[in-house]
Length: 481
Image 1 (tube, rainbow, N blue to C red):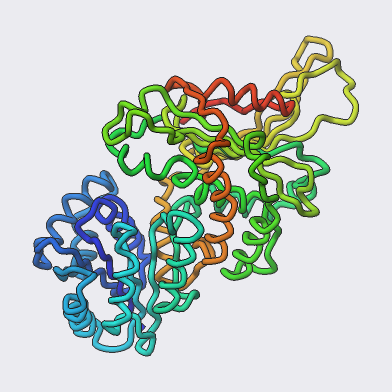
Image 2 (cartoon, one colour):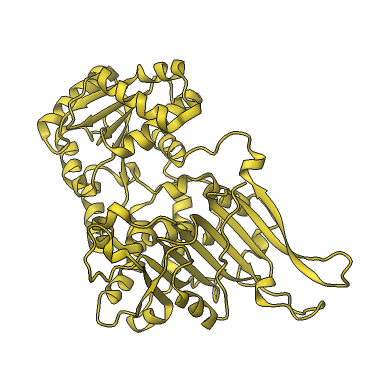
């Protein structure tokens, strides 16, 4: 059966910057099913050739030295364009005619909504009305970009509306963090090595830190960001996804439903916060200068930094806190997971401070790899010890460049593998964790909004908050080479 990818919002930034370069590189590596067609649709008027010419320029820019004229020409021969509005039934009927002409028989299709989320429901309705969602001539899958709703209520409505047209097994909610090689490597590290799993529990682990730090500030996204805030922008999706992969049990098989079943169990085990607990279990901040950003109200109370302490109340993790934090304008760009192990039960070599306990640091980006930090003896100094790293870096072990996450996710969507995509119950459970925090923060009981200077690790109060718990943040920028 042949394959077609239809990209709605084809003239947008995501298409030119991420989707087409990813598809081109997959084609160049002979990973795409042979003869895969890419059809773009947006309101901009392009002919097939004009769109190919535009894409050639942008793909050359975003793939740089990996771009080759011959492989591009092979790829571009299967690229097509249909001008139209995806919310208009007649325009979608025209697209349907073009697809049937190109496919000339049964085909698997992936519809990628690279559009503003506010268009999702009307676009899905029209896909159903036009017959484009009909599964009789082959699977029809739909890929949705985040955000999946604005809160729990809108997420439930979106899921209901999508499932009215597309069955849940054909809905692919994309979070590009799950497409990163380093996130998948976390699963391999845990479940393919017998040395880690026996110590991956409350008996050996004191706490877990998950940090997604951004060096950049809001900039021109102020209008959007002030309506979203850091919890909607980063926690409900990226950070909770990393928590699920860190805390999940091993599935019986690496099967989409079995993997997602185990992830959902983690969310179900997270202890709900009562409103009176939120001030103690969360911390909020805003970088100095945020209120001067374009589109941001002068009295904005929107958070650009947040830290949460979550508890996973199950057999494996009972009593082990998970600390999640993310912020704009921080010291550096890094995404990392820190497994902080407990101290040995008895110290033989003098009193050591807490931070000298062993830790496993998994760098998701940009210095992809992992470091196991252990205690070793300092030569020629009696029994003095120091922390030394056992260091694995993808850049040293893997000769090629790390593939972009979209390559893996687009290929999985084509092949019908939903393992790395969010399921409806997963999305709703995640909102169920974040919504009460947002509601309390927007109420009269909101904890203090701490201001912080850019270029550091968030508010100073964040360090004090951790010290109150008897712990410290792992504030180390990754070394990129």
